[in-house]
Length: 130
Image (cartoon, rainbow, N blue to C red; front, side, top):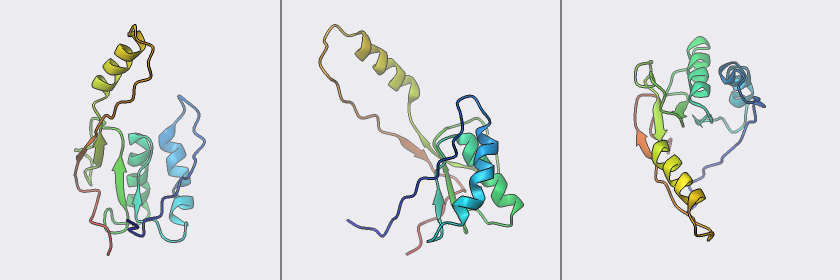
């Protein structure tokens, strides 16, 4: 069902092992200039979500009233910062174990598995606007 949701991708071009916080922080003006106005942001890294919160705090944005922010990494501190960061959590230990089991299996058949995430709902998100 069409819920009127439009997804956009903003590429920060952050090389591996570089500062994703600074990169995400530098791209926030571009994200906030998109039309229609962005109402929720899900950076690829948890540190990128921290950068979005930092940008909002230093530019007078109210999280979650003006922008909901969701992290894909359950970093130590996500529940401690203000506002506490909503996180989509995945069992990465289970995923890594299953990946190794599949790779080391004697059976060469393709395998498809779904690893269901959970959500740690915290203060950085608000219900969608109707």
